[in-house]
Image 1: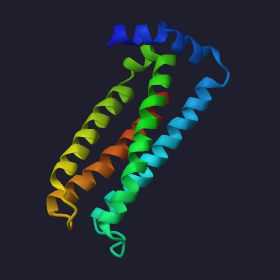
Image 2 (image 1 turned 90 degrees about the vertical axis):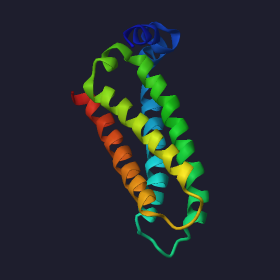
Image 3 (image 1 turned 60 degrees about the horizontal axis):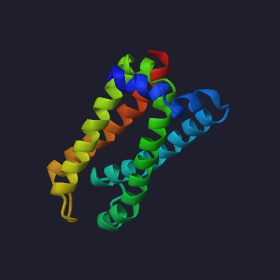
Image 4 (image 1 turned 90 degrees about the horizontal axis):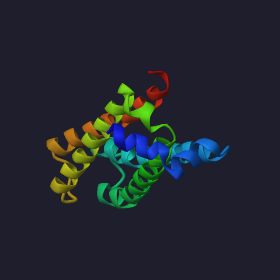
Amino acid sequence: MEALAAAAEASALGAWMRSSTLAYPVANSLHLLGLVLLLGSIGLLDLRLLGAFPALPLSALARALTPLGLAGLALLALTGALLFAADARALVGNPAFRWKLALIAAALLNALAFRARWRGGPPTPLLRALALASLLLWLATATLGRFIAYV
C-alpha cells in the first residue's frame, strides 16, 4: 500500500492536486456532493425499508433513488482518488482512513447482499437488518472521513 501511495503522490495528478489553488477544494466539494447523493438517496431507501414513509411505494422509490446513489458513489470514488493522490503517504498511515476503507468495503458487500436477496416485494427481517447495516455503515464511513483530518 505504501508503494501505491508513493506512486500516487509522485504522479502528475498528485502534483497537480497539490499545486493548483482550485483542484483540491473543488475535488473536496464534489466529494461532499457525492456523499450527499449517496447518503441522501440510499439513506432514504434504507429508512423506507425500516418502516419510515409507508405511503411511498418501495419499488418505485428504489427505482428512483438507486441511480442517484450510484451516481453519488461514482463521484465519491473519482474525487476520493483525486484527494488521495494529493496526500497519499499520510493517508495510508492514518487509522481513520484505513477504517474508512474497511467500512466502505463492508458497505458495498452489504449492498450486494441486499440486491441479491430483494426481489421487489415487502422487506423481510433480513432485508431490514441489511438496510440498518447500510445506514450505519455509510454514516460511520462519512464520520471517519471527517476524522481523517484530526487523527
